[in-house]
Image 1 (cartoon, rainbow, N blue to C red):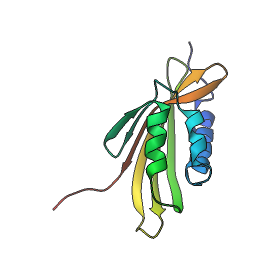
Image 2: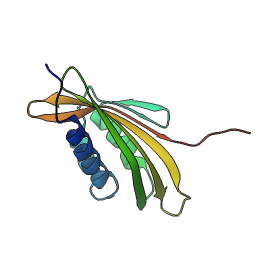
Image 3: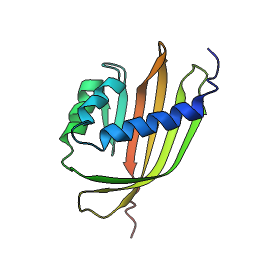
Image 4: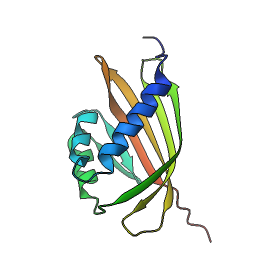
Length: 130
């Protein structure tokens, strides 16, 4: 399979759609459609999960209701299997917590005429330094 020439548009479109669903607690359960039932992986703050059911259990367990998000950069690269690697840098504020920088990396894999999220790594950029 060749490199997908639309990788930048795919990356930006995915990020926009993903966060629109994630940031609305009523829409968050719809994220299940973006993951594969068995082969998707997520690392959320160091916790590793596999499969859409386990990923959604984690996402649905998050207690915050309100998210203010500012995306600083979305960088995408094409992959040789037709997929897209996406890295997001931004800041988010949950409920009344102070804002924090975060990074999130996605790997989209082609599936028919669409994509699914095969890998998702999320980490707040908090450093424990003395």
